[in-house]
Amino acid sequence: MIMNKRILSILSAISLFSFVACTNEDEPITSTQKGEVRFSVIDTTQVEVETKAITGLDVNDFNVALSRNDQWIFSSRKYKDIAGTSISCETGTGYIATAESCTEGEAERANNNWGQVRVAGKKEFEVKPIEPANVQIQCALANTSVSVVFSDYVKKYFSDYSITLHAADATGRSFTFDKNNYSYKTAYFNVGTEKRALQYPASLTLPGAKEPYTSTGSQTMDPASSYKFTVKLEDESKSKLSIQITTIDGTLVKEETFNETVNPYK
Image (cartoon, rainbow, N blue to C red; front, side):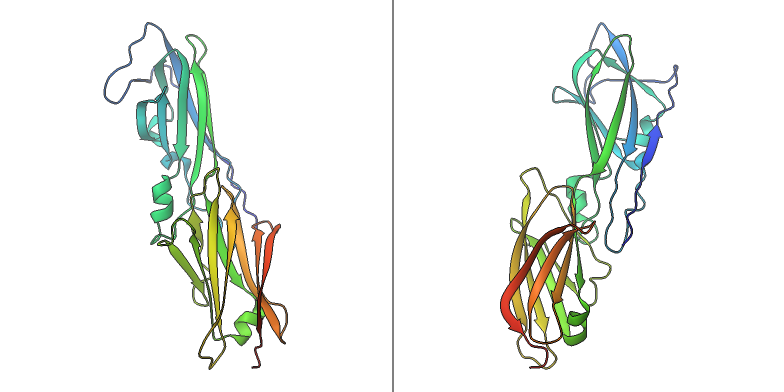
């Protein structure tokens, strides 16, 4: 598992003769004084996923929005379309600029609902009549990811093994990691400041067994986090199933051991 650090910085090239009117998409904002706004979008994401790192994110394709006092000036423009320009805006406070690689909805719908990485940032600023507002939007990981691995003992002694994950408030959106897909699958969840509960039924089936061993656990997800679930048995003899949850850098979050004893030789 390799930590990949991506720091991408795209700084606007400012042209004194290239101006875009800072007006509402439906109607202009009138003002006796104007000031300049110059944007730069920076991706400061430092994320590692069990089998893959964040790739293919280009800040030029990020959607940028600008509002003032809850009124849209523009709601979605590609950064590449406004980079290299100065935007003339009414002077004053209350401006908010945002940038994102995708919307929250897209972050959970992509890849057949498994989701995708979402990177986003926000900056509040003031426009002054003489001093240009150099607005730097720092974007970072904005959603939470979960990957799964199965221990060598599990893979050796069980003919089938799987764990299913779903948010407690969205049971219809669930993800099953099994022996065929766990090595390359990652599930993504939108998690706000109030956090979000995750439930995870696990199922292990011995060769020739009529019924699988099953256990269910739960975990509260933090926003902008990456978790790895390890489903394991402690040894080759009688053992209890446990699920270890760590952050992507190896920090232990939780280890839950279930009551039922699993005997691979039974």
